[in-house]
Length: 265
Image 1: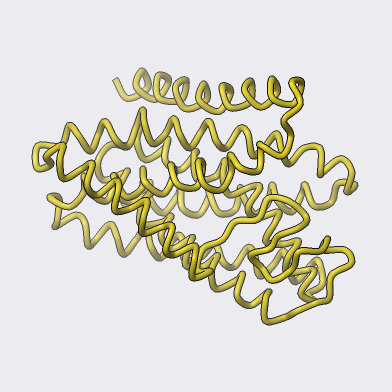
Image 2 (image 1 turned 60 degrees about the vertical axis):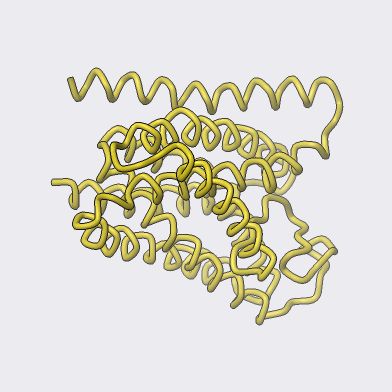
C-alpha cells in the first residue's frame, strides 16, 4: 500500500506542478509577473513548515537516530546542496531573468542558447529524482509526513517549473516542446520514489537521515534561493503581502497535518 501512495504522489505531484506552470505561462506576461512573487512567498512558508514541523521532528523521534547525528547531517546536507548548486546541477529560476542559466538579460531579448536548455533539462531531472527519494522516505516513515512532503515539493516546483520553461523557450525550443520536455523531466521523480522504496524498506536505520537531508534541501531552497528573491521588493506593502503569504504556506502545512491526523485516526 505504501508503494502505491509513493507512485500516486510522485506522479500527481509532477503532473500538478508542470500543469500549473503550463497554465500560468498562458497568462499575459504582466499578470504572470505579478503572480510569481506570491507563489514564491507561499512556497517559502510551505517548505520551512514541512522541514521544521514535519521532517525534523520525525527524524529526532526515530529510535535509531541521535540528535547530534541528525544536526550533523542537517548541516552537511545544507553544505551539500550549496556545492551542488555551485556546479549548476541544481538551479532554480523564479523570474524572467536568470544568471544561472547563462544570461543576465531578459529572456525575451537574450540570445537563444540550446545548450543552456539541455543543461536545465538535465539539472531538473536530477532535482526531480532527488524529490522522489525524499517523498518515498517520508511515506515510509508516516503517511501524513509523505503527503506533507509532497505538498511542500509541489508548492516549490510551480514557480521553478515556470522559470525552467521560460529558459527553454529562450534557448530556442517552441513553447509546446518546452512544456512537453519539462513534463518529461518529472518522470525521474517516480523512478527515484520506487527505487528508494525498495532500498530504504530494508534499511530503516538510514530513514531519519534521509528525512534530515530532505529538511536540509527544503531549508536551503527557502533561505538561499527563494527568500533573496523576496528581498527585491522591500516596500512595506509588498513585505506585508509576503509575510501573509508565507504564513499561508505555513498554515497550509499545519492544517493539512491536522486534517490528515484526524483522517488516519
